[in-house]
Image 1: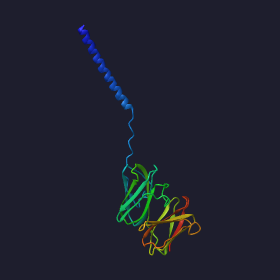
Image 2: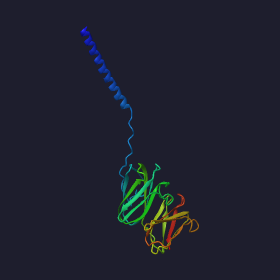
Image 3: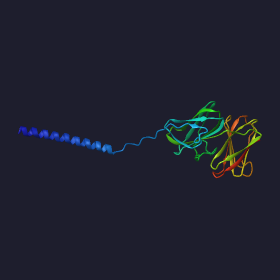
Image 4: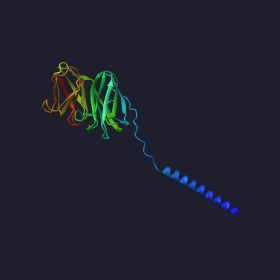
Length: 255
């Protein structure tokens, strides 16, 4: 009887160990069938933007990590007027910060000021403008509240200079924009554009962080901006179509 009892205990122990082993295997199999949480999107290094390259003016896509910024290198080859815009497809609040030789400017919200990019500017999107000398600059894209978000970024440049008392014949492409520099001599100049289509003009004065926008003050759907009491400086002037279909020759005059 004692032998029988001992055999019974051994059999029970083996059954218990076997049950535990089966349970462990089942648990591992079940754990392997349950997917974990998806990985969070990570910011990736952005390729430099080099003025003059065929891709320089294209819309670029990137991502900002939480409580971080994404830096994009900008290489300017010749003194130019530069306009930079950023859009959040996630409807987040983007910020832009441009630094480099003699330049440190930033912007949070630019809705309603300028809309010349390959994406539609929305309420909390950002844009900035500057006149840049040749050199290396850094564009930092961030999110105002520290949230992670995707972004679209575009840099438009123009090296055409239109001094006071002169004019320039420039070509406006459908959906595009004319970017030019105007060296103010007195600060009381008048800027005007004449075209067959309906055009809009935007002027930005870096020294005073002031901008002007006009649609039809020049008559016959032509824009005109009268400056008064501004400081002599090199300013950014942008001319674009009222609609994406407007294109053709544009005469930009400074008087």
